[in-house]
Length: 467
Image 1 (cartoon, rainbow, N blue to C red):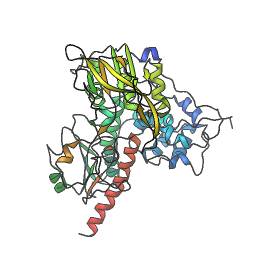
Image 2: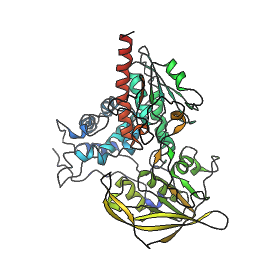
Image 3: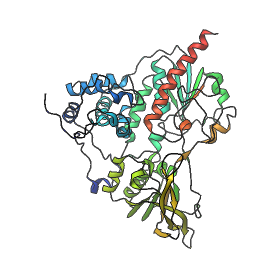
Image 4: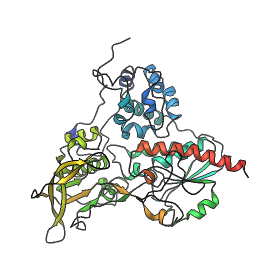
């Protein structure tokens, strides 16, 4: 057996000086030969901890073994037993904090973990290049409505279709995909990939109806009357703002609006598409998560000369993926650590011209376990900016919730559902993903969708037994 490499097989990328001027995908993917080289590093553990730390419990050693053998069809057969969105997960799932974190090879001080996500992408991309064939799943077990076509809704719909249900997804926007379509930029997740994954869900027999705003276009009472059960997966896309003076100035955006304009409405390709986005010279992005990275890197690609991320904690607490931070540094994004905005400053025409900030220090840990940022007296300073983008999290969309009053919510305004089953306080109504947990990752939303599909199947079959 060949000696295992200490490090992961590198994946080719666009050079930073080129990619910061375009929206094409940064990571270019493995060739089969590169994938086989990386797959050979896997120890093929019998009780693989990587499986246990995957929210959808993929047989990771199973599909990697087939890659090493060069059998992509068999590798894909393993993957599709567990996930409906492998090409998406292979790109945006935080493997370094989940499956790869527990990789036994990586737990050695000498070796890096196996590049599980990159191998998943290799197989999924291969599968998307094959002819798409409709699957004749039966639809005789019942009817299920899924509200929202993001990762959780798509996962639940795909699994329910495989189980024999007639599934209809209702999507409020004009394009399916939820956060995959409106939130994540093209350079990280090409929309062609999202569309192909959605087409594979449709091929399972799932119907997707767009431009349907549940609570307005159709009521939950109508859905409950027409379907045996429903799954609420509407996400958490309502923007949060800090509420500091000057928030209403022209030039202050939520990350939700900024990224939706760019991604869903393709402002990056203006004037070929009709949605413009403000031309900026100096951009600040407030926040430290992946959304902040996406906004900052998008602003750079749209032509901003200077882009800075303002984060109230230090780099050690940065929640964004290390890969995204690393890419942002390569692309010329600057960082103001331990800094917090306290006011947006206007020019004479009501437009943003600067952000007043204060330096912070880390005090005692708060309820999350992280040290609480505290302002340092008399540490104010000014950052020049004509555009500010707040990426400080999202809240629940109220349209459905406000028209479905009997549904129980928690203290944060999200649906109060059992995260182990997806059950709400209303029989036959299940919920999962960000609308239950608050903003989280794509793979955790998918995990909730898988759980809900199993529980919905049990619920419907039990109901039939007692008719």
